[in-house]
Length: 79
Image 1 (tube, one colour):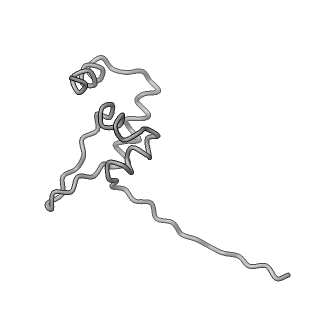
Image 2: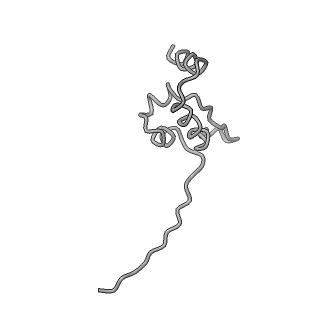
Image 3: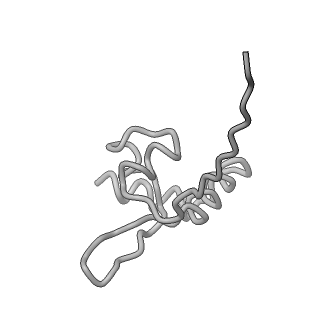
């Protein structure tokens, strides 16, 4: 049987919709909207997208512990 080599080049998206951003963070969309302090970018046509780099920075900050101002922001979003 002959073999073949397949080379793929996948270019990941940088700007994500809310559902894509929630999936990237491993959170259900409803919880993502409550928990995520990252502000989406508003495009001229009204689309809002989350920058994957900002999301990764936020996730990395969770490893170091939650800053009290971040906790206050999350609590304010619950109200």
